[in-house]
Length: 434
Image (tube, rainbow, N blue to C red; front, side):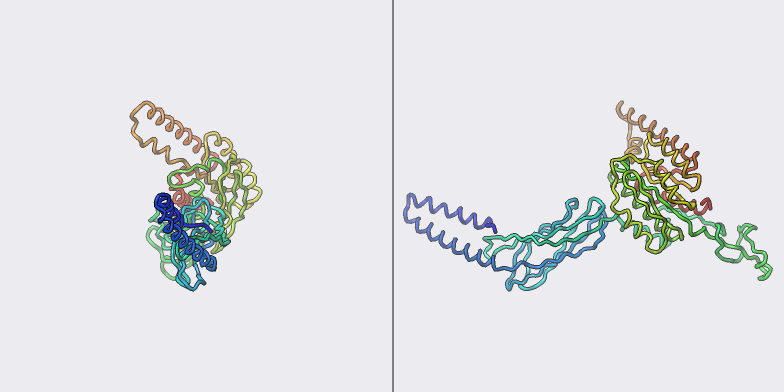
């Protein structure tokens, strides 16, 4: 229970007649009368405020919300007081969230409900909690305010930005993957799984012709194949210190998770199973799974993964995966390697390539390309330019050695990784290499 500014100002104003009463005694009556009236009003207002029952509050929001996106939260306030009630509302949102339209002062109609809306923007993934709601109830004469804390806990999961993933998935559903840069090969009858018989088309290979069906129907009939289904895709997710890098578009690990989830969706539509193994301080193993809720299940297992301060141990991860994954699979290593990591990464690829088809998705910072695009105007700029050229040259040589060891390398900016990864997967499926 605290006095408001209006009451404090009124008390300060009464100091003036008290001072004047020193020289003009009749001002003492003004001061006494004003003080009695103010104290009476303050006492009545305080008594009235203490009779007000605390409004009920209900919070409404989704239990899963995306990182980096403004998400709406609703608060339902119900007053049981027979008169209109002026309150200030502040919801205790998670500390690492930005907020709009908070706190908010409003008037609740007598014995009615009122719904207010505000927005939060989570800055990181993981489990978050709304702890409660602060209500400041204003008295009728606005001389006092009463603060009440309502313990109203709500747990939410902050996932990767699945709205963007859902947009990609919608494009895939509508066969509009080309709109986001995914290439689709125009192939006729190629693949490894028989799909159907159809009439011969110009350009079909002779080996596709089904001579028995052709003699029966007395016209040329071709066999049509589709990409082999029921294969397995396994991600090796680097959670080490190099994945802590951030750029203007967000954290590298967030881009990697988006790419992993998008490719999981595409693989699920291809009839393949998807799993992952995380390493570099966080060790989680999800065996390859199939089904319509594949993406959701993968999302539930990886949404709270954050990069650590540990170094990525590629050799240990490779040996662990070889013991866990016996069936041949497409392995996608999602990492951000440095020159000092290449020797160990090459050994890991050599181990994995004995049984699996290996793709290394190696991120590089956009700042490197920006240095190359920037005009060189001074000596420092020239040295910086040459240092980046030398570094990228060493990086290309390292990637060539990885390819020699049996890996397919994707050198990509984080923002372009989802598209590049899906394209590589479709190329592998089309080639029948898996």
